[in-house]
Length: 114
Length: 114
Image (cartoon, rainbow over all chains, first blue to last red; front, side, top):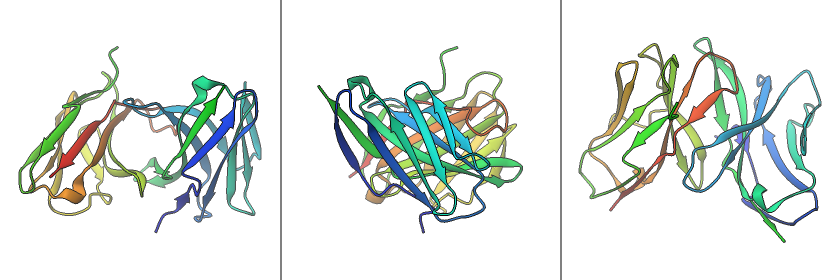
């Protein structure tokens, strides 16, 4: 049973437009959410995060929105650039053995075309 | 620092053979994680270590999988015997502290079991 779901396996966006990547979760105990970005032949790298006490966190062109009642979060990239083309993973943190274990979604492949 | 190092980068083997994946975490990091990435399930945490001690192995799929960390600079993930359904990309990650986002991933090992 997947606790973190990214229902869109791929997304194609024109350069300069907004990219919106979505993520849903089922466990109301999650209290921290993260987005990771992965280029081909590389490991994922941390992009942006949000605590459950907030509904928005912004870092440059990247903004993450959290809707706790709907158990939904989204990543907005504005404006989108070709270098943003990558796989984006949504993750949720849950306490396990004194550590915040990360539960990842299946990923969404973003393609930004000129 | 060279980052997290994984070897081999690619592995092709036949069903029934033993496979050993290797990881060298970032020096000084106390936490080490093994993940598996598949198209259907995304990134799954298999096991993680703190100070060389396995803390949570609930993600290890079955007894064919085993992981060890004999010292702070080396870990192995072994599959014996391997099966075609084990084909995936296996990532190692390390972290300095139990904070949520500072997991640094290696480039991964792409495993194909024929």
